[in-house]
Each structure stands twice: as structure tokens, then as C-alpha cells.
Length: 291
Image (cartoon, rainbow, N blue to C red; front, side):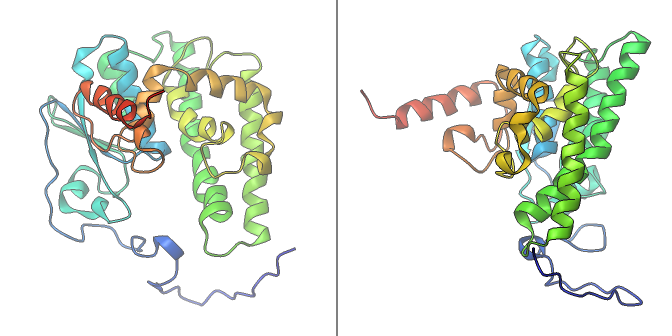
């Protein structure tokens, strides 16, 4: 058992800029831009500014799925926002997302800025008439799961992921607290997927695209290195769903976009055309030794 350090909150909290481990340089209690910098602009109407975190993957998976359906108007430019360097605090990014979080989308066709990953998924689904049922009852069920994810994922990422994987010190109470909640959420999903192929029914929708980057990556071993700790093998229905979606070509492509870690062949720092993926595949083949 970890020995807890005694902490008595002060009457009025003050910011300690050095407290926060690896993220102390970019975490602060105020909003707004820290420096002047314009965002780049590409040739397509849809301009995405992001990083391949789970929230970023939601949008690139959605865009690649739209393109896979033959919706050419969903072509997009994806620019890397390096949150470790504070790119999200540039004046250009803050103009698109005043909350300074990735992802952020600008639609030059409509002049709309769209921020918050769930809002972007809904915007794209409505704009292109895809991955969102038209039947009111089915649509409502899909929206139930989309909003469930938006409310639940912070407990997985900012809660469990932070204290288990990233916090500068490990303490029993927060890890136990957020592990319990993460496993409860996994059980919610597992029970739902026992009776449905996808979240919300038989059709693959934005509810799945929102949820998979968080819980799919978790149970397939691509997040937090916590598979054994969480006993993910016991969630049979959740694993079935996660592995099925993982095999989709658009998901494989979407996971690569704006990715700056892991094997080089799995990274595509910027994306401006479908041929960018082919170039990355050629780089991979060139690096492999001949038999």
C-alpha cells in the first residue's frame, strides 16, 4: 500500500507553475493565446488542426471513413498541432478553438469553426449525411452513446490514464478510484455490445468512431500499457467490437494522421491527399530488408 502524503488545501489556491510533471509547461489556469502565429491553410475546404490522441483520432477516422464511402467533398488537410510545444496556444489556433484543445476544424466552404471532438463528428455527419441514422429512434440511440462517450472518456484519460501512466508520483487512492470507474465503463460497453454489433445498433456510426479511439485502443493494448492491470480479456464483447473496428482500412489510416510516436510506418505527421498514405507505405517497404 502506498503511503499517502498529507495535504491540506490552502484557503485560496495559487498556481505553482512548476507543479505538474511533464505537462507543467503547458498547463495553466488562464485561457487565451500566448504567442502570435497564423495557422497554415491547405487546398481543401476542410482544414483540420490536430494530434493523434484519442480525441484527434476520432476526426481523422471519420474523415477517412467518409472518403472510403466515395464522398470526395470530405477531402481534407490535416496539420499537426504539437501540444507539447504549446502550438494550441497560438493566436491562430485560439481563433478556431478558444478552449485551446485539439482537435479543431475550419470549414472554408461555410466559414464555420468547429471545436470539441463530439461536435466535429456531428457536424461532419450532418454535412455529408453519413454515419448518423435518419430514423429518429435510432438517431437518438446513437446520440445517447456519443454523449455518453463525451462525458465518460475524461475519467479514462484525465483520470485513470493520468494517475496510472503519467503522473510524476503514483498514489493508491486516485489509481483505485479511476480504475474502478474505468472498469465500470468497460462493463457498460461490454453489456451493450453483448446484444448489438455496434454501439446504438447494427450500423457503424459516429458513436463507434467517438468511442473506439478511447476504449478500443485500451482493450487492444495500444493505450496506457494497462491491459493486464485492467483484465481486458474478460470483456469479451468489448474486445470483439474493438478488434473488428481495428481492422477497418479507414481506421488504420485515421490512426496514422498527425501521429508523431511509435513505428515510423505508422506516422503521418501531415495529411493533404490520399497519396500521402501510399508514400508512407513505400517508405516502409524501402526500409524492410530484402529476403
